[in-house]
Image (cartoon, rainbow, N blue to C red; front, side, top):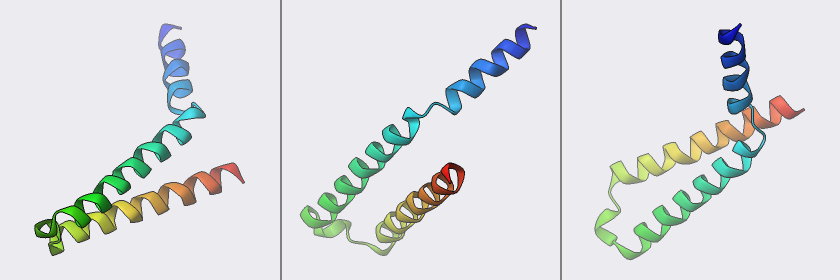
Length: 72
């Protein structure tokens, strides 16, 4: 019985609707920081950093697609 209650709490925690807004805000701040870093620090414009930024954009796109698929 306790394991079922714990499972319900965990499920409610991960399916909380506000995660969508919180994660998008964090991703937006991260992207703004990376763009700011690229503009202000010209030595940060290396291929590895640009590839990491591209991966972040790709993850953001996947999150959007999965949330849109789940909501529609």
